[in-house]
Amino acid sequence: VYGTVSITKSVRLEGGYTLTNWLIPDPDGHPTVLDGGNSQQVVSIGSGVTATLEGFHIRNGSAAQGAGIYISGGAPTVRRNRIYQNQATQDGGGVYVADGEPLLENNLIYANTSGNQGAGVYVEAGAARMRFNTFYSNTASTEGGGAYLASGSPAITATVFLSNTATADGGGIYKAAGVPNRLN
Image 1 (cartoon, rainbow, N blue to C red):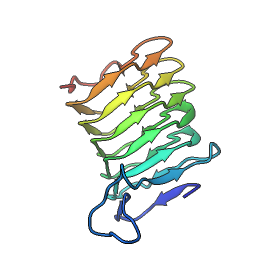
Image 2 (image 1 turned 90 degrees about the vertical axis):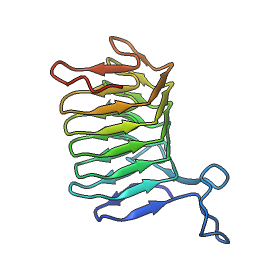
Image 3 (image 1 turned 180 degrees about the vertical axis):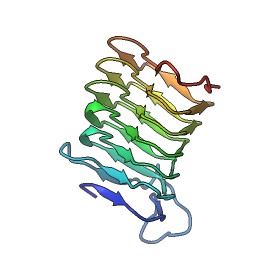
């Protein structure tokens, strides 16, 4: 699928199925690709939505913020995805969390770039929960190669950061002043 997938309802979207097997998903063996064509955002999740996005390859997004996934608010679940090769001219190459309580779980977030902060993930506000993710080879032009935590009360648990870079500070994680320590 090329172009922006706009999620405005509380639905469950799953990738990894085949035309002959709708019972057991295999996202690695049968990838379902959402591709921005290097010209637009890939996924936008609206405020107040509790959707689930699971088992996709989310790649080649291009936007000012949230080139791969932009989360406006609500409590969506983003699970078991590969989020890669997305480019934000400002913040959040892979994922941008504007607000809400999203759960980012068991994702591979890699090879994303940002022209400013948070190449892998940028958390503007809210209480994002990130667990069992792997961030690697993300590059930010200033801070937070892997993740940039601007405000709110995000929590990062059991997550791996490898080979992420930022030209200023926080190759792995950059935590702005006032963000509580909920990094485990």
